[in-house]
Image 1: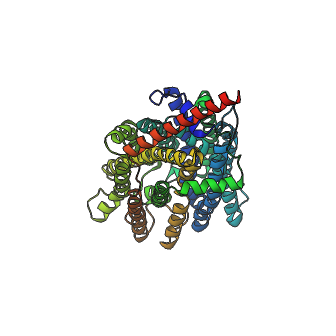
Image 2 (image 1 turned 90 degrees about the vertical axis):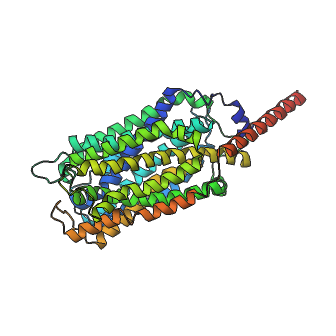
Image 3 (image 1 turned 90 degrees about the horizontal axis):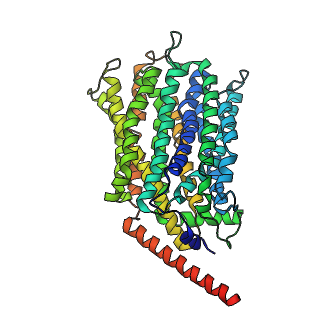
Length: 501
C-alpha cells in the first residue's frame, strides 16, 4: 500500500474537521511563541543590559544556535515522516516527549549561576539555548506536519492554520501584556521593568510551567485524530541518513518549495533584525515604560491577528495564495518602518505625547495583519506543496516540508539578532544604558537600522514569493490525479488479493 492508497482511505471530511481538533492543534503554537519569542525578545536584553554580557557575545548566541537548528529541524521532520506506530501514529510520540525538556531548558536560560561572568556566561546562554530550540523542534515540527494532514481541502487548510496563527498571537501578545504588568512592572528604582534583575526568576518559572501544560494539552487532545492521519507506506524505508538526504533532495527539488524557502529566509532576516532591535527601540527610541510596551503589543497585534483569523480563508477564496503572500510581504516590510520614517520627516508625535502610543500601535496593527495573513498563507501553501510531492514521489512529506518553517521561525531571532547585535556594536550602544540618557546620535542610528534598512530583505522576499506557482486550479488538478492514482492502486491491490486466493 502506498501513501496514495492512504490518501483515499483518509476518513476525515475536509469540511468537518472538528472544532476541538482545530483548537487543540492551534493551542500548541502558544507554547512555541512563549518559548522562542520570550528568548528572542528578552534573551539578548537580559544578558546584555541586565547581566552585563558584551552585546556581540549576547547577539552571537542565537546566531550560533541556528547551526544546530539547520541539522535538527529537517532531521526530526524526516524521522517523523517515516516513524511507525499504529497506536501513537508518526507525530505524537515526538510531541509527547518534548514538553518537560522544553520547560526545564527555558528556565535554565534565564537563571544562570550568579558566579558566571564573561565567557562562561556566554557558554551558559549558548548551551541552554541550543537545548531549548532542539526540544522545541522535537515538538513543533511534527505538530505542524500534523496540522497540514488534518485536511486536504484548499481553504480548509487555511482555516486550520488560522487557529495555529491565532493562538501564536495569544502567546506573543499575552506574554508582553501579562509580563509587563505582573513580572516587569516599572518601579521607583528601575527606569524600565524589563531591566529588573529580580523579575526574571519568577517570570521564567511561571512561563516554563505554562509551556509544559500547553504542549501536553495540544498533544493529548489531538490523539483521537491518529487513526485518520496518513501513515508511512508499507514499502517505504525506515528512517536512516540515506533516506534523510533523499527526503531533502525531494523537498528542495520542488521549485515552488525552493522559492518559498528563499523568500522565507529573506523575510526571516527582516523580522529577526526588527525582533532584535524591537525591545531596544521601545525602551530607548520611543522611551515607553514596560506597561506601555505591553499595551502596545496587545493593541497593535489584536486587530492584526483577529483580521488574519477571520479573513484569511475568505481572501484565499477570492484571490490565490501567491497574490496574497506577495502583497502582504510588501506591506509587512513597509508598515513597521513608517513610524520612524515619519519621525525623521518631522510628521510623528514626540516622545511623551499622549498620541505617540496610539500612533505606533496603529502601524503595529497594520503590520500584524500583514504578518498574520502571510504566515497563514505560507503554512497553507506548504500543505499544497506536500500534495505535489505526494503525486510525484508517492510519499507524504509534511514533516520535512514543515521543518523548514520551524527553522525559519528560529532563524528570524538568530541571524537577524546577530545582525542587530553587530549594528548595536557599530553604533556604540552602551551597556546597562538608562532610557532618556543615551546620546541622540546613537538613538538616531538605532531607528535607521530598525526601520528603513530592515525593509530591504522584506522586499527581496516579495520578489521570490512571486515565483510560487500553485494556484487553486493547479491544486485541484493535483488532488484529482492523486485520487485517480489511489483508486487505481486500490483496484490493483484487490485484484492481486483475488488472484492469490
